[in-house]
Image 1 (cartoon, rainbow, N blue to C red):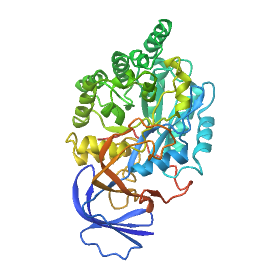
Image 2 (cartoon, one colour):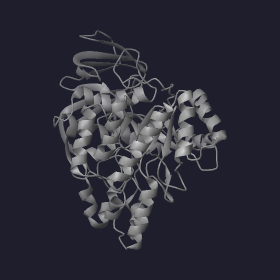
Image 3 (tube, rainbow, N blue to C red):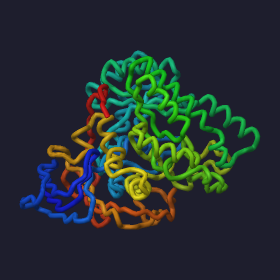
Image 4 (cartoon, rainbow, N blue to C red):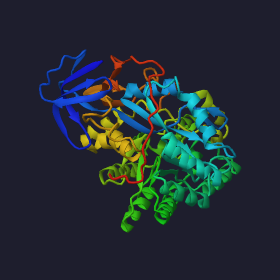
Length: 461
């Protein structure tokens, strides 16, 4: 199939200009003024934006957690992502403690193959590091195209590794060209606060937030940065929420260290006052929790200062009935909320339209930087000749309202119910095929491809 997009305002992380875009098969073939190609399909993009498909590097699809599973699988999750303008996601494989990375990989391949509609890749979560796993880490990088390794500084007994294991993992990953990512919160402190609140009978969702104060994230972020500095390994902090954690990364820059940082749309737009809504606050129970208005301001500034490179979602939805597992105890509420579909539109409306970030910065944090950091650039993450034809045609002026009644995520409530936004994904192209048109998904399960990723040890952003 060939597609000619006419007269759009093309936006990359570096520049914006009016031009035509010609796509043939699965690649971008030509960019220029008044292109004369006989295309199978012509799209008039006058007064529209044309930018690279979004990359969400932080999603949890069909994930086992707290005795249940996240409610979006690879079919529903990637379809919802496409509706919002995200053409690729990176999911997290969770190693079972005592088992191998290869067995975990096989489990996630069964979840994704033949089901994904959008493109995808994996991070490998290392929850039990030893000499055998160290060999598997090398094989993941060299043979499987998985070059990023997730670690947890919380969830003791299930996901957490200790600092000694973390340092040894970093040494192996650095040597072989990978990247270590982290859930940076002080698990011991949080567990203690949860136990104290439960003992005192403080069981509402508000105490989920109060059991994870800012210091738990700030301390762990600084400790992770110190371990990276000691080992020389590149690292990436996922879902950063607060000013204290951002300042830990800022401090690391004074010793000429670069630590990559991701925040999420919810931390830029929602705040902890939502936890005061009695049990309805369970809709926003996630870890780390929502923070304060001052933290939102810090994170927006961090994006413009180059301290925050990526905006993801940590998409991990649960049905309301699943959330009610914790109706009598906040510590039993499954953590996570639905967000994969709204990221691009929400970031545009709250960021670009409100003057917080530029158009080029928008593309940088929603697509390009993730492609660079995780070893997919320039195949993914940009509008350039030879790149995959992952393209969004976006109406910057169309107003609409988020609602569970209209979203495509497999979740029976919305964390953004009734929120009005300006800017709407209109047409989405994935590897040269129309994915979304007239609010309808044109692709079938199985179209999505696993994207192997290159080594990431020499990232320059």
